[in-house]
Length: 443
Image 1 (cartoon, rainbow, N blue to C red):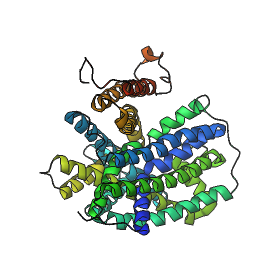
Image 2: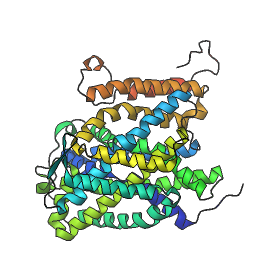
Image 3: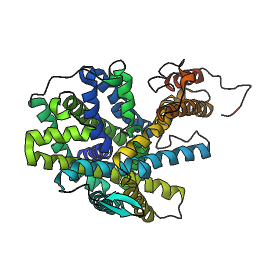
């Protein structure tokens, strides 16, 4: 079978597209707020954040490339399907995709609307008229661009993303050039546990979950571009992963520093979006606010396109009777509906879910790299992921407010990472299992 070789320009476009898919709502609002709270401990908090918000997505994409898109092949069919459905729902219509529209509205549209909080009654509930109209328009655009996935590389990677990158570079340069305020003392969990707190904050970007799905989407896009050789698919996906990771790292470091040195701009701020808005409005006035609005809207739009496309592709393969185009329309409508729940409520609901599912995703990436070293790869995959899920459930319940004090003896339980040591030890034990075992119980 003939295979197409991608030019340097096409490879860069693929990398820019991957970067744009990841750079969405959480990527812009969480780092400034974390930097403000971490204060003098910003370096440790930022390192933790970079581990789960840059390092893990990078490794996740490489794992997908290494497994040729089949990272769940060694799990039981029902377990693999259930895990995939859970991840796609989380990064799609339940949390991540609707959040992109909400952040775009809060930062990109609200400052320019005279009465953004005017309410209307609909179905017995109150809705912001401006937010409702914005989310409907936002997901209409997402729906239109997602209906033609073969053109994603051209429309997103080569057109929208370069504009986004230029605007982000301008913002980052201003953070470096313009003197900031003195860095404050850390508060809350950033006082004693800045590294682990930063790691947990990195969960909120959902990028490790997205990397498993975006990797498969990119491989599919490469096939549509005529790149059929598996080695070439792996090579181009890995290159795109490093381009995306470099861009994300650059953005996060500058935004962390912006938050830590925000000074008066951070007074009374409840999220990183408000810090960003105050900073840009003060230093650049109306033009700056317009640029920030463009950055945020483009970032959220490109991410939403990637999420809706990935989810539609997945559910189309799972249920072929439902056409891809029908799924795009339905998922876009669901996202627009969920988006009107509200940003604060959406984030508060998503955190316990992420605390439960993130350990499984990280464990999946880990065992993918260890597959060739396992004497019993199928058994090892199932055991390690089962342990990660078991303890992840307790971390999720703890975050939701339930009493999990009976697990206080576990290392890192207080920090919300009780899953880490048991999962790592299980993976190590699996490395030493013999090829044949008397007890062939299947997990």
